[in-house]
Image (cartoon, rainbow over all chains, first blue to last red; front, side):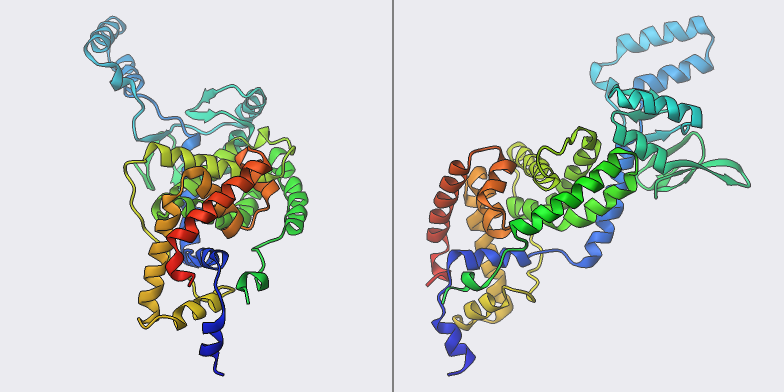
Length: 166
Length: 208
């Protein structure tokens, strides 16, 4: 009796069919991309995204005389709808924590309070450790730059959108 | 001969008890600030979480996204993990809840996209038996079988689908499933029984 005949005699049950699903899986190359995307997403979750309102108010504050800037802000706030206050898609990295700030962040993180400092949002102890681990100063001929995870080496005030540093 | 009797689950409950004690040490390191250790947990569980989510959604693009989301949620709340349950059940619970929320939110926007069946491995014997009974070529048959299996699973309710995937595909015990899905072992058994009855009907052509 050949193998084909032997196979024909065997009875399959539902459990056998479902086990085939264990073998539906992506190839090895998929996991490299997966890991990279996961690191990028984790970093993005850490970084503060300023609202359009706060960015425009900052612009008014520094570019106009105080009285004019207050009037302009009042007009602006009156004119726009609440939806404009929503967070924008761009991710700002203005600064990275100094050693002293990192210590402060550690204290605040342990109390689980939201802390926005230097545009990095710290919501948990994990966030603090992640920020401390990934955003670290490195020396270069152009001055101090900051290494933000595996995204790129970025200057202070850079804007990161996706993988691109502006 | 029943093929199920000769095959084993991906890992047994004893294996997972050993894993659980290793995981406790890893989590303690992460909570103490060594966040790089989380990569070890990602590497350890990414295939398993992916598999659970993939079988719940039958959509590989959503699966990649949801698996990453589950890991991010786990990472950001790891300081809340006190070790009352194993890390394994804790992260499975995050993955299942994340996926169920996504599926409920997008119940009218559903489409399938499949990963290829990797033919090597334990189920090759099952595949050989199935293929020996059909006249069409193997790849066409496998594609059809894959579609039928996924369609059948997707006709089950979310609670029944979750239980049968965790038990029959992922190899979790009734007790482990009860912990992951936050219900009693009796409920798990009842859901499993009902889900199997439904699938028997839907897949009867392959079980002759």
